[in-house]
Image 1 (cartoon, one colour):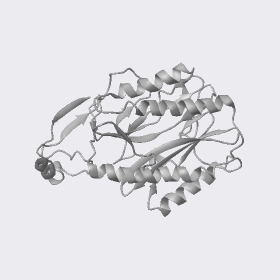
Image 2: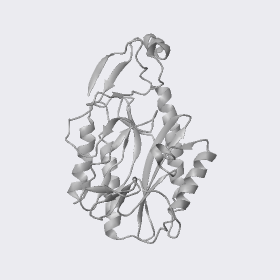
Image 3: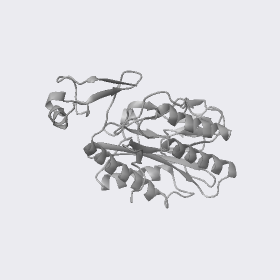
Length: 295
């Protein structure tokens, strides 16, 4: 990561509006006493530092995402289908003024991702019936007033095996150990290292091919948030950065493959996989988990 020069008047505004800087936030930034700096990742892509107003919008969208996942807690039981989950998510989102971000995103046909057992991510809801012993990830992203909130959660279907339960628990621990590393001056490598170390200590592997990402003004933004890595490397965290942390942890090897539907990602060796996800914001003193219940 490097901090680039001050924006020129005719450059696209840092806020992501698509307008020229001079027609958008230049006046506001000058009144604040300093033109906005451009923060870029290792690929030279701009990382949008969100304004307080934007963070508030992302916070509201993230809270709607959290409400949707909460709504599912009592409904996801043996005997329902993943299409039932899709319908409930879609209806709740629309009725609360939101838009389900996955629907038609790059051709994805449903409003939510549902990933069962050995499915790592991007499972497509259909008529599959959930049965006793399954583990399920539900990944919800909501657009509310133009802002995105992204979170996923694991659900245990009835009584599951001790091995499956432990994988789910350790994956959640990986997420929160990573979140503890989110504060100004730390790096994305610190986040990835915390996840990799904890997962591998328990004999699990970290998926390499799918990672977290910036979010808030778009579904996917820079930077890439890898769930493995070396401490002290990568982008240095600054207040106003908003991104997801979403470790995918496999009971077997970390290799994956994509099924013929071009979306569903499964473990290459057929082993179980688990994932938990939050959208977080770097604050001046640490971190705010935007998709966690507030108050």
